[in-house]
Amino acid sequence: MAHHFEFKQIGVIRTPYTDSAPYQPVVNDEGEFRIVLQREYAQGLADLETFRYIYVLYFVDRLTRTTVMIEHPAWTPDTNVGLFASRSPVRPNPLGLSVVQLKKIVGKSIFTSGLDVFDNTPLLDIKPYIKDLDSKNDANYGWIEKLAGNKQHLLLHIMGIPHGY
Image (cartoon, rainbow, N blue to C red; front, side, top):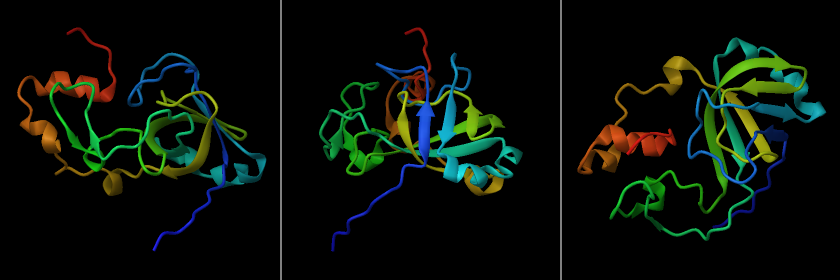
């Protein structure tokens, strides 16, 4: 049985990106990255500054591609995987999730490390990243482990980190 959901936009994400953005957050990216909450949610920031990292959940509002169930990751030749085994932003529900470093909070603005979203992206939620709850020491690389070649090179592509080929 299908359900209809509605989300409230609680703020906006401000980044220097207007035409292109990295595939993943880049910690030392240049420019100002901040989350600006709507006034009625500002009180919810109490004690958030005690955390070093936060989850940022947002609505991916500028998609132009159609969702497909088999994805071809651009960074690896001749590989097809199921959509849910990929990190593609093109999904049945266009929700984005990033983990970023919280630098400071000023009023209703949260200043962060680099975010991988376009300027003025609608913000849906913020949650604290908690070390022992959110770090999984036994996590693996899934299908990426099976790829031939240099795994470290492939990881640079996945993380969106500029590098030499």
